[in-house]
Length: 240
Ligand code: CAA
Image (cartoon, rainbow, N blue to C red):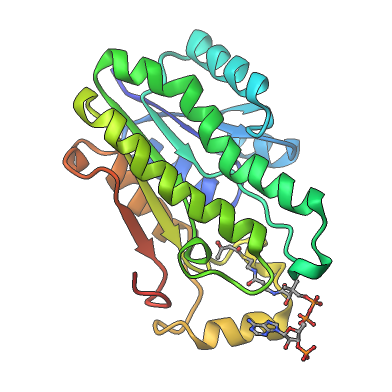
């Protein structure tokens, strides 16, 4: 029987590319999303992938949402923690709400999803968790103390949970994307983005599919000896 993967923030951008790649690789895939019903409807229409709406930063909603997926589709074998937001501002202009929302969703979402899904993986003796970090969690980024802290936290979270999952056949890894051609990156002011692209040795933004291929490998049977690692996919912008 096909294994079941859930991708948070799975209806657009990198998340959608991950859903499509995992489906092509033989997983049954469900997508979680927070708000954009039109994008969810489009994904469902194009691929048949079922979409479940809840805020991954909300602990109770995440536990209930994953229980619903398990009941309606089956036990969750793979989790891709992709959901994330930016609230960029220099520290002296950043509000507490900007800080807290990014921590709640980007880092808290990983904890909430793991609380919901890791115990079952552990009991069944197989699981894959892939957390989407960021180059900006590795290197820092002007205007992103919230995002860089949350993404950096994801890398620590990954290494800690990997140690807990290892003897139960559950691998936990991270991918650190660089600047990828998505709506999130398109929101960076053009002159700032031009300067960033000039620093990417490969000379271009990445594509969502290039992240999806890395995620799919880490979710595969072939990656069973890889755990606690971070795969950087950034065109050479930061060599970590
Ligand atoms: N290093 C040093 N100085 C910088 C700088 C940098 N990287 N970026 C901007 N500055 C300077 C500017 O030159 C400017 O200096 P002057 O006042 O002396 O001219 C000063 O900082 C203020 O810059 P802004 O006018 O841009 O300030 P702002 O308050 O309007 O905006 C900002 C600040 C919101 C942080 C804006 O610069 C910005 O959006 N930067 C992009 C941040 C970024 O890369 N976000 C990534 C989003 S994509 C993502 O996160 C996905 C992923 O994982 C990779």
